[in-house]
Length: 86
Image 1 (cartoon, helix red, strand yellow):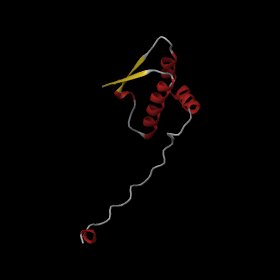
Image 2 (cartoon, rainbow, N blue to C red):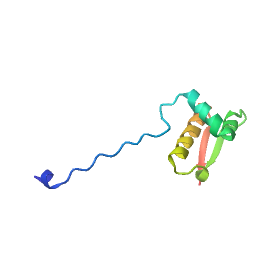
Image 3 (spheres, rainbow, N blue to C red):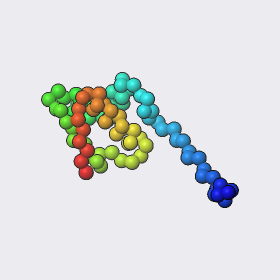
Image 4 (tube, rainbow, N blue to C red):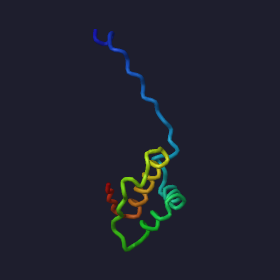
């Protein structure tokens, strides 16, 4: 009886982003090399175990969030620990 009076919630739209979470490690490495060369240098440094990332380093647009994802994933591939600080 309650269903008759409750309007159906609309389906959430699905947005296709430019960056796929199914990217291979090689694609992540290429993106980081092209877009974040200093991050790549920090991750490839054998003397460093951890990298500090400022919270404000990346914005909120889809592209910047995708770059943040790539940066964190590349650091994981390189075996680094990331600390995010405000």
